[in-house]
Picture 1 (cartoon, rainbow, N blue to C red):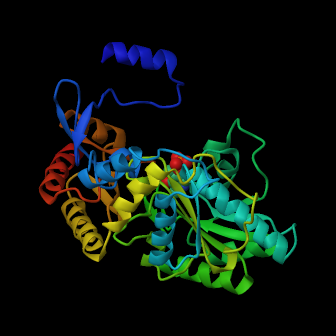
Picture 2: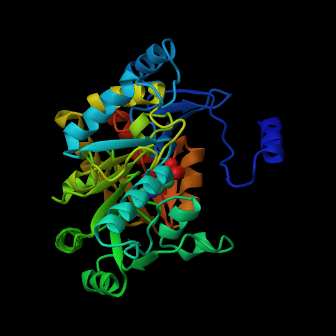
Length: 387
Ligand SMILES: *Cc1c(COP(=O)(O)O)cnc(C)c1O
């Protein structure tokens, strides 16, 4: 470990503050370091390994495709890409899918699509995208501009112009921004993830959806973190009774391989034409085969089980000693602790549980199929780390 740490810190760019843990293997929600010490994984690679580590059906789907064709480019047809797009549309009512490799790229597609739609329909000056304060939409120069947190922007100016930020849960303020700017789209996360696991209120989301529809302003919902079963519905917007015009997603979609998607609704179904957008790796058949395996198992019973596990975590941690509050939805949970979150996470790690943080909270994003007894064991460790 100390040699690996030296090599890593010498040669890997210094952008990540890693925990002093190396993981060499795992199964489901349990991972192992080189000495055989086990950890319950309550982060699932930041909400990526939806069915945990080395899930057998997923592995089989991926390796079967790997044994056929690993990549052909988007100049040719491959089956997993088409099947996955069909599955995504049939389960959401969206009409078309553009595949990318990451969440930021899914948002780039959403933004380009919204700007083209507005340019054709209302004029090129209708280019503003309203996003929310405290949001997170990615690390590219454009998705940083979309991200409503100043500290990510510093030293990277100038960012892509045309983004303004409204306060979450202030519908009148958002309407005023739309009146002051020629607006193409409003982009939201239903639950602000990196912003501290903060769900938007249903009244605000429904109000802005109705306002956007009335003004022919597109509604983009960033489901990069909240999507693919995370909240106990296939996509978080489904908890709010709205229908977005564009949904971006990534993280948990591929079950551990890089895959993002922008789902395009009726209004923008035909907005992108030949040559308007593209990606060399997007829609890679191996990644898509894994995603088909993941999505095809997220039926109602599976999603209801996510809700049950969520209810268990909420009831076990709300009002627990050292816990101020618990926020989130499904298995996307933020815990405001009396002690600093980093200290709680450190204590959990020592006791064999890997947790994340978001702002000043401990954040949990376990695999959605985490067994109940494993979840209970992790919650016990977290409870004792909070006091
Ligand atoms: C993680 C995240 C992104 C960025 O995804 P990448 O795959 O890291 O580019 C964008 N939006 C939200 C809401 C996210 O949680």
